Image (cartoon, one colour):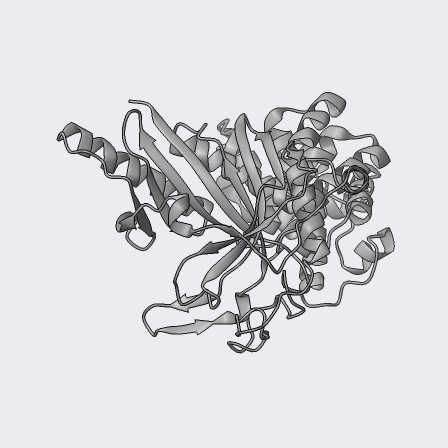
Length: 461
């Protein structure tokens, strides 16, 4: 039975002020109801300011990144009416489509809108915080081209990457919210709300598809309705009969003139916007001859991808650069739960580290320690220096070049590990690797593993 899935995705835009007033968009870690004014709290008689131009430009750029056609005719702002405590004026302002007919990962993008965020309502306490009310949102509506939860998850991850590449959405994460519409072929369409993460969307889709299939098996008709996703239980629960456009009583907002996005503005935004991640991925594969898996891993963050391209041009060592970034740097920043941008690394200091390895001044092991050192110093605010030979020597990370020092450590390891020596004599290869590891520990990772292996074999003979 064919599954039909579409998304409506909302993401906050990274602007200093709200969409229709000058109140700050900061609502996290501030006292409730402090960054507000008479406009964003819907006070009687309050009139909206002219629309935030940064929000308009950001929405156009996002639509272009999703390969949409930009609407050059007047775009009207509408009032979408519904009664809920987080909406003080009784309606939400939302634009007609600014972009249409795009595509991402073979999923059609029907429309891209600009609208205002409601406040935050806590149904348990009955309290409302309007700090978030009026924050600009971009809304992206997909075609029902997704057929299973796995493809839905893949699409949302790619969309998140595109949005982050623009630099126009909130960088702190956790601001994407989505609704999804699901139906089985021939059945009614069910909308699921309250989804706040890609993982949540995947789980909601899996549950809802199973629920609808079980109803079909029992001969029960699926009702067209709106359901809430209860993430703590990983289930969906009925909220209400699904609304139609007529239920929202859309009318053009008489207080806001229509938007007019002309060809000159579109050309200006196009010329300044970054390369889309899916295009960068393809170019990396074609230009540098790297695999799809490598290209996908290193283009997840724009800052890392840009720095890797710089490093490749600096060093002309594509494989070394890609492997070091993918398997060393990404491993460290993911363990520390940081983004590449937060790590303090850049193309210059990573190029310096790789050059020190190439010139024989730094082992691969201590190159990883050097990366950790930069990240740790960035976190505590003490990182100021470039990575130089003098710098790593002062940190005790430079490679040991004196063979007699390495030989001394090898002999100590042989004398301290008689069982491993006997195992080696019996032909057990793991014993040699064990002793190499012990020598590396004694030399704090500063010995060249190939030289250690050579001296160790010679001494054991």
